[in-house]
Length: 254
Image 1 (cartoon, rainbow, N blue to C red):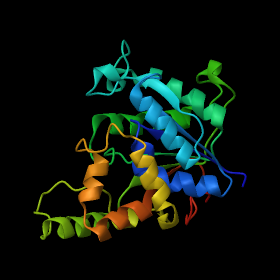
Image 2 (image 1 turned 45 degrees about the horizontal axis):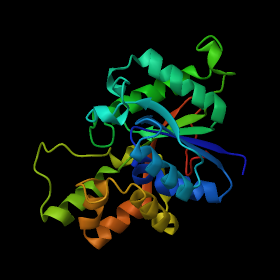
Image 3 (image 1 turned 90 degrees about the horizontal axis):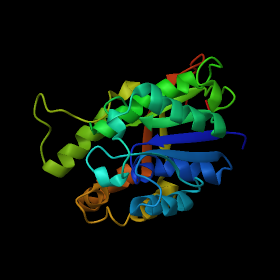
């Protein structure tokens, strides 16, 4: 399969939670897959967990920008927080990875960062800037030969799925004015059925042992009703930002 896919995530474990099924599905189909993680430094415990997760998902070795998590200074001793780094600098670091991997598509979070985390929101902005800049020979000339991905896909949720899950968990619809995750259903460009890879995704999530049982996403998923948990593990949804003429897409290759 002559197809390359690069995911850009804020923290170790996001690659599994947000795009684990996609990475495993495309790796099994023979695509080139890779992940850039914006925070945490090599040699830290969570970087080691990331390495195991990527091995499970077939996504190669960790690619770390090495900035600090917004809420955990010890995640990258001596390095600035990712959210404090000028866009020009962090985008340039990411451009280098894009030009090395030469992906057809790049994946990251939607504009809300999935759920509003500042590192996620910043990763969205940096990814869009870098994916566009990577195609210009005038920009970052020392970062490798220009490469233009066809599109960036933004991991998100259809609003109908979010509302249905809310009602299942809380037994009532969200109140008017409640801030909800996701986007209107009509904005979803690609829905991937990754149920066949859900066990791999779950195993990759649990490779992040420091996060299991910490009140983190894995704990939340475990506490969900079975149907809601299966829905989130077995499906991944994306908006599309195109750098070429935009076709009607049914898969990430389109």
